Length: 612
View (cartoon, rainbow, N blue to C red):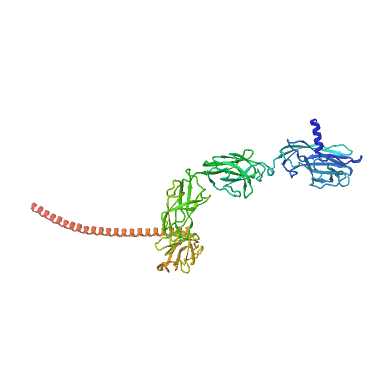
C-alpha cells in the first residue's frame, strides 16, 4: 500500500466526525464560512487531554436555512514513532449554533467530549431563526499521549448539502513534553541505613559490624525511596547498587516488619524498586561505601558502614564516681571498644569486671552486661557494690587472669558511698547574676568523713521546715522542699531564675533531723549572691571611678596647699634673714662712716701742723 493511501486511510480513521454532515435539502446553502485557529502551535504534557492553553478552532458560517450544517475533520498528519494517541476536539463555546452527533440528533453539552473523539462525527447546525451566523469553538488536543515529540494535526472543514466551501483547512503543531507528575523515570532517591536486618527503620544510624563472613545474616539494611523529577514517589524503575570496600550485596522484599530473603548475590546487583538492599560481611575489615544508581546510571544515594575485627583496645570512663551499696547500679561505666585499626567494635553483649577489692565492689572476672549505643559508639556497664569504700575496676574481655586472648582496659576508681548523711553543703554555680538569669543551686550530702554520700538513693528531712528560702522570690524549681530528696551522684541540683530586682539575694536554710550527726541538726546556713544588670554594673563602676578621681584630685589639692605653706615659711625665713643682714650691714656702715670721719679729722690736723 502506498504512503498516500496509508495517509488517506489514517485520516479517514482519525476523523473526529465534523467531516460528515446530515443531508440537507437542495435549497440549503452555507455561506461566508471560515475555519480559524487561535494559534498555529500548542504545547501539551504526556497523559494530558484538553487544558486551558489548548489551541482553539473556530468554525463560522452564515446559515440560510435551519437545515444548513458544516463539519470539520481532525486528522493526524504526523506523530512520534510508537504513538497510538489520536487528536480530539472538545466543544468549548457556541454562538447561534448547536453541536450534535448527527444533524438531527440531540445537542451535546459545552465541555463535553462525548461525540468529539476521533472517528466520531460532530455536526454544527444553526440555532435561532435563519439567516443567522452560526459559530462553534473547539479545543484541539492529543488524547492522553504517552510519547513525547511533535504532533501535526490537520483540521479540514466541509459543507454538508448544497453550496461551495470557502473555509481553508488549518494545520496545528502540538509539542508534547514529559509530564513530571506522571514521569516514571527515577530522578532522586532517599536512603536509610540501619544495623542488621531492620525492616521498619525510619532514620540513618552509624553502622559498624563484625567482619565475620556470612551470606545469610546481614550486617546492614538499606531502605530506598525513589521519586521522579517532580518529587512524586514512583516504583516502576529498578535500581543498581555497587559496593566498594569489604562486603557483598543482596536484595529482598520488605513487608514493613520482615524481609523476605535475601541471599548475598554479589558486589554489583540490580534492585527491584521497593525492595531493600542488604550488606553482608565477607571476612574483611574496613570501611565500605554502597552506591545506589538509577537505571540510567545517575547516582542517587550513597551509604557507608564499617566492618571491624577483634577487640584490641578498651577505654573506660567513669559516669558515676560514687554509687550506693544496696543493689546493682546501672550505667556506672562507659567503655569504648575498638579493633586494631581504631574501628568501633559493636557486637559485644557482655564484658568481664575485675575489682581490686571485692569486699567493696564485686568482680573477679565476673560477667556484666554491655549495652551498645549506636549514637555514642560506647557501651554502658553496671557495677555491683558490696560495702562502703573504694575499689579500682578493670574492664576486660579476658576470661581469667591466665587467659592469653582478650584485652584489658586501664583501671578506674569507683567509690561505694555511705548512705548516712552527716552534713549538708549548699552552693550556687556563680556569685553574681543578671536580673532574671538562670541559676543552679547544688545540695551535696556528706558522710561523717566529709565524703559525698552514695548517689541514686533517697534521703529525708535534710532541711528543717521551709527548706531553702530566698530573701527575694525566685521561680523555677521548688527549693523549699523538706521531704524526700532523690539524690544523684554529684549532688541534687535545683534550677531557678533570679528576681528582676537588683541587689543581693540571700538563700538561707536550717538543717533537719535527717542528718545522722546531732550536732549538725538545726544548724542555720546561708549563701549570698548579687543580682545586677550590665548597665547598673557599668554605672556603679563609672561612679566608683569618678569618686576615686575626686579623691585623687582632693589629695593633689591638699598636697599643693602643704607645698604652698612650706614655700611661704621658707620665704618668711628668707625675709627675716635679709632684715637681720641689713641691720648688721647698716651698723657696719655707720661704724665705717665714724672711722672715716675720725680719720678725716686726723688728716686735717696733720695738714694744719705741717703748714704751721
